[in-house]
Length: 463
Image 1: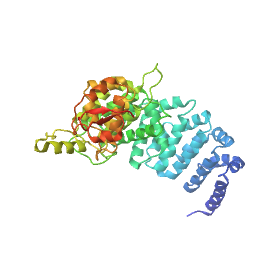
Image 2: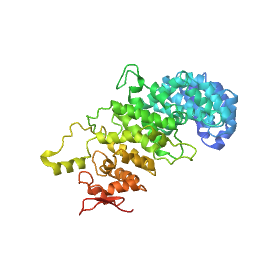
Image 3: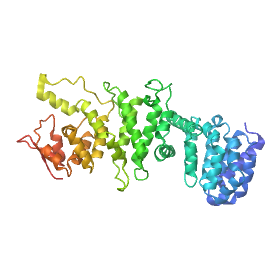
Image 4: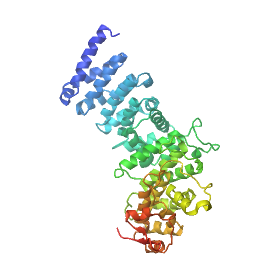
C-alpha cells in the first residue's frame, strides 16, 4: 500500500516524468536534477524507480543536465542507491543503467565518470542478473564507455583476465540463458572478439565442466558447450549483417578456422541431425557457425597490396585442402546417390563408411566457403585442380533436399573455378563424365558448363 506522503510524491514524480518527455521540458526541469539525486538514498523501491526514470529522461540529450549529473557525482549516487543489489529489482537496475547510458553519451568526461562508478564490481553483479531488461542497457553502457576517446583503455580493462573477463563470461552466460538477441550485445561481443582480437581468450574462458559436451583432460580448447555456440552465432550474425562497417583481423580468422577444425574432430558424422543451425548440439553448432563465419570472411575484398587479407592466411594454413577433404568424406548429394542407384542397380558401391551431413546445410556451407575462396584467385583455382577437386565441385551443382541452395553455391563455385583459368577449363572440357558426376542441373543455369548430349563431354559456355 502507498502511504499518504508517498502518494503525493508519486503524483509529483509522475507529473515531472510527463514533462520531461520533451526537450523543452527537460531544459525547464534542470533544477530538479540535484533534488532527485539527493533523494535517491532515502527512496522506497517505488519512488526510487520513478526518480531513476526521471533522471533517465532528464539526461537524454540535454548538455546542461548531463554536465550537472557528473558534477554532482551522479554516477556514483545511482550505482550506490540503485545498483548495489541489482538482482533484487531488475526494473530499478534497468532504469539506473538507462540513466547512466544517457549520461555516457555526452562525451569522454562523462564516459569516464560512469565507468569509474561501475567497473569492475557493479558491472559483474549486473552481468549476473539473468534478465533481458537489464542485459540490454548494460551492454549499451559498456559499449558506449568503450567507444571514442579513452574507450580503448577501458576496453583493455574489460579484457583483463582477472578484472574484466569474468564480466564478459557472465554477459554471455546471461544472454544465452535468456535468449537475448539485441544489437548492443552483438556489437559489444564483436568489438571484444574481432577488433580487440580476444576471441580465443573469451572462448576458452567460457569452458565449463558442468555443461561441456566433450572433455579431454584439462585441455579446454577441445570442449564445447552451448555458450560457445551462442557466441559464434552472435558473431556470425553481426558479420553477415554489417560487412562494410567492420574489419576482420588475420588472427580472428585463424582462431575461427581452429575452432572449426576442433569441432570437425569432435562431431559424430555417422549421425544425421535433421535440423538447421542451431541444432541444440554444441559441437555441431560450433562447426556450423564457424563455417558460416569463414564463408563471410572469405567473401571480403582484398585489402591494399601492402597488407595481407585474412583469406590469404587461411589458404596458407590449408583451408581449401581441409574443405575438399570434408566433401570427399561425405556421401554424395541425394540426387547423385539416386542417379548412381539407377545406373548401377545391384552393383552400386557401398556407402556405409561415408559420412553424413551433421546438420541441414552443412554441405552447402562447405561449398560456399570454397566458392568464396575461389573468387578471382588463380592460386586457389590451381590448388583445387592440383588436389583433384574439380570433379568433386562439379558434383555439388545439384538440388539437395538436405542442403538448401547447394545448387546455387555449387554453380558459383564452378564459375569461379573456371573463370580466367585456361588450365581448369581445359581439364573440364577433356573429361568424359557420366550423369552421376555431372547432372543436367549444371546445364540448366547456362553459366559455365553444360553437357553435350551427343558426346557426353562437358563444354564451356559464356555467360
